[in-house]
Amino acid sequence: MAEKSLTMLAVGDVILEKPENGKYLNLVTPTFRKGDVVVGQGEVLFTDRGVKTYVENFPAPAGPSVNMQALADAGFNVITMAGNHAYDQGTPAIEDTIAGFKKLGIAYTGAGMNIDEARTPAIIERGGVKFGFLNYNCVGPAGEWAHKFKPGCAYIQIISHYEMNSSNPGGSPDVYTFAVPRTLKAMIDDVQKLRTRCDVLTVAFHKGILGMPETLAMYDQQVSYAAIDAGADLILGHHAHMLKGIEMYKGKVIYHGLGQFVSVGQGLTDEQRKEMRSLAAPNLSTYVLRFDPARNMTMIAKCIVENGKIIRASYLPCVINDDQQPVILKNEGKGREVFEFMDRITKAAGLNVRYEWDGDEIVIHQA
Image 1: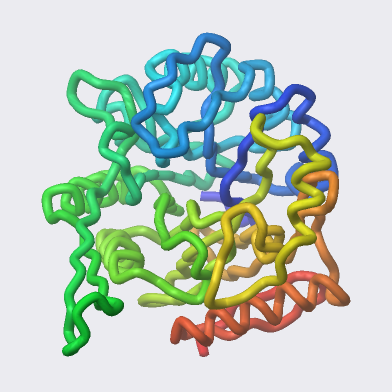
Image 2: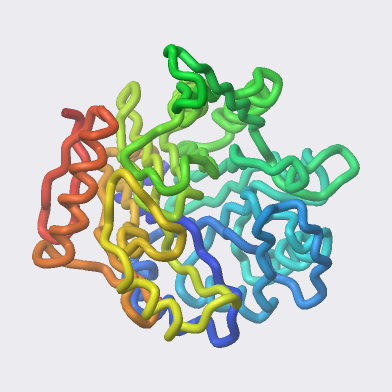
């Protein structure tokens, strides 16, 4: 095993549905290219022959196959694929995305032509250190999931239970969420098997409540803690398209929500998105899909690895500019706004970390 320090960078949801998508990653490419391992969540897949399945309430178009080159050019070398849009464009999107990643040398996990393939980890080696990745969709819908004879994504099934605990029929219930034991055990088995094959083990979950950055569902911590108990070193969360708090469990860092990193869909023009961003102010308690500027705060998670162990975890604060490009911020102005937002939502969620500036990055410490 090498003694050189290695840098792993990770970001949340990446959507590249429009042509000429390379420009949207231009401003972060220099930083990505300094990373030894760069991982992102492939929120939508790529194909030129997709078949609309309508298994999701808001089915996503596929990105053109040529757009995969933009990921490689930016410096991504691992893409997680499990999510609520994994099967929106049917079998062709999974086939073509996997084929494209193989051609470009991008490792992938979380989706496949059957459930065994979807649960297969990605393993890459840098400087004598092996990095292993697993990825699971925790938000459904069931039509996205892979099975023995059906393509799709790896998954953990989550049950939601609503209980009225007050004398107020029709009022707001208490909500309890938990993983179906069979599917949770499958993830635990995968982590335990991978543990012996790599030095740094990361599990990425597509999870979290939309529109409530300060709130974690019960299952958020259940699945994260279970993965760490099974041997994971790091947990990455995405799906909510907003930042979520960070916590530590048994000395391991859990990024509950990395936020939306690039969202360039076919549904809106850049000018329409720019106009919509000016219509509402961020609010911790309410959320309007597509309209809340808090959605434009994001981050790049950063982990330093020495001797096969994560010795430091931090994040680079970012904002998505008017041209839909993520911009890395400094310890001033908007960078401090992201710091304050993360500090506020982390405390509101009752999580056990504190943040500290170190130059222009924000280091995570146990509180």
